[in-house]
Image 1 (cartoon, rainbow, N blue to C red):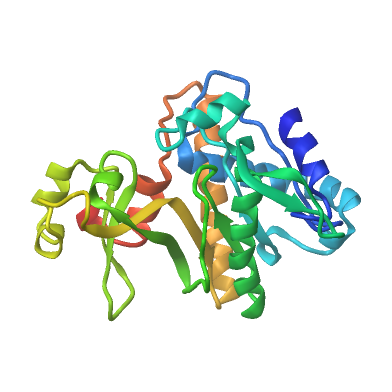
Image 2 (image 1 turned 120 degrees about the vertical axis):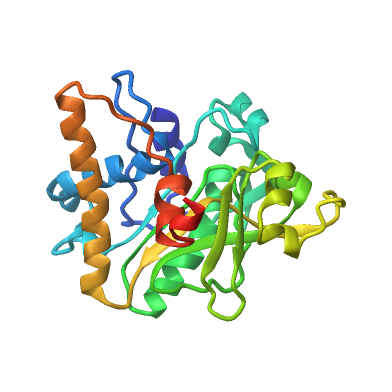
Length: 278
């Protein structure tokens, strides 16, 4: 935690605006693995619970509730199957990139980290939400650098996707097919093998799995946006996430079994592709 706080303080005024609320939260110390999905619900509930204290530190949050905010969640991640060498820096998100971060005078003295680059990519999504005058929740990944020119944000859950080769996606990334007319997710497979993709009734008709090094499909790294033009509906989305956390916490307090909550398997697929893919 101290590493992140030290770095974030150093990039105030360059990557992070002065006065912008930034909170570094740790997972619980007890021997419980949150999973990528509960990382969202657990820490969102902590922010909700500590809003009064945060308002004292960040005046911009005055009179704002969770449902009014544009929030970026950036999980630090674990051992990382996509970028394991990043652990040499203590955490993959603080791995340095061969770029210099410029200060207000245009002088580059400090190396960009993956964290800086991901945050700047994430701002494109909060800026797009601001243009629509909407709050929203943007969940990013600590080892996915976003190069997004103009985000398309719909109502409900919008997956952030990119093109990727079949060989690069296998066993490492989410794979999905988006209907070009409705823009709805029809297929979502979490870290599938080439054999799994080739056997899927929809995917096998769209891609040539005999050329995995050159053929591309649509991939996802557990990155998404939750927003809605209907404020009441968006509030219900947030309340559902907090209700999931309350349910799990109650089971935990009673020493009842709890299970990993996976962001792709338990959030994406039910909310997008539907029961057939779940």
